[in-house]
Image (cartoon, rainbow, N blue to C red; front, side, top):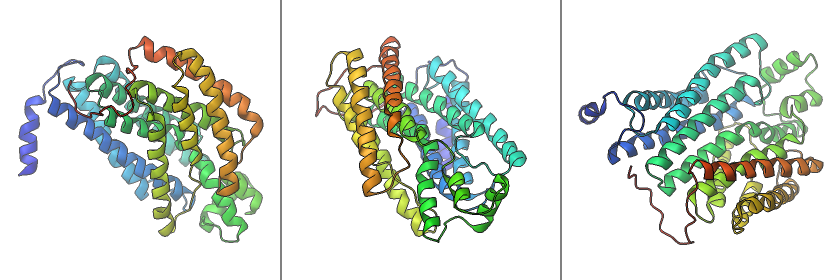
Length: 374
C-alpha cells in the first residue's frame, strides 16, 4: 500500500519540463534526500572496497561493488528524473549532474576492460579509476549547486561537502592502507591473502618479498600524499566555508569525514579486513582554513591561509606519524603544496564571487536551517 501511495503521489510530477522549473518544496526535499542516500551507499561501498582490495583478489561482483552499484542505480534514476522533469535543478546543475553521471558510467566498463587486459590494478591512481572520481566530482558539484540555488539549507549543504571531500580524497586511501600492509608484512602476519600477493608478484615479475609488498602498497612517490591532501583536500574545505558562510564550516566538514573513517576502521578490522591510517591531521588543517577566514580581504586571505594551512598539514602529519601511523612524508614538497593551494584558493575566491556562490558570513551562533524553500 505504501508503494502504491508513493506512486500515486509522484505520478502527477512526471511531466516533461525544462531545467529551472519551479519545484514544490516537498518534491525538492525528497529529490535531494535521495541524493544523500545515493552518496551514502557509494561512500559505504567505496570504504569497504579499498579494504577488500588489500585482502582479496579482485572480483567484479564483490559485496562492496554491489553496495556501490546500489548507490549508482539511485544516481541514475535521479539524473533521469531531473533531466526529464526539470524539477530541482537549474540548467548548470543539470549539465554537471548529467556529465558527471555519464563520465562515471563510461568509466565503469573501461575499468572492467582494464582489469581484463592488465590484470590486477595495483593503484587507485590509475586512469580508469581517476575517471570514476572525476565523474563523481562533477555529479556532486551539480547536486551542490542545485541544492544551493534551490534551498541553501546549511546542514544538507555541509553534508554534500562531506561527500565531495570524501570523493576527492578517496585515491589517497591507497597510501593509508599501504602503510598498514607493510607493517603487517614486517610483523610476519600479512593481511593480504596469498593468492593476491602471488598475483601482484607475478604481475611485477618478481618474488613475493618485502620489496614487492612495498611496490604494491605504496606505488606512488612520497610527496603525492601530502601535496594532494593540501591542494585538493583543503580547497574543498575553503570552498565549503565560502558557500556555507559560517565560521567553523571547514572544521566541521573535516571532522565528520574523519569521524566516519575512525568509526568504519574498527568495523572493518573486527571482520578481518585490513586496517588503515586515519587522516586525523586533516582536522588541524581544517581549523587553519577556518582561522584564515578571519582575514576579510579575499586575496590576502588566500595567500596567508595557504601558508598557514600547509604548515598545519605538514606539522600535524609529522606528529601523527610519530604517535600513530601515517603515509610517508616528503617535507621538501611543502613549498609546492603551499604554492598549489594558493593558486587554487585565489582562483576559487574569484570563482565563487563571479558565479554568485558566496554566502554572506553569518555570526557565530546564528540559526542553521535545512528547510528547502525553492
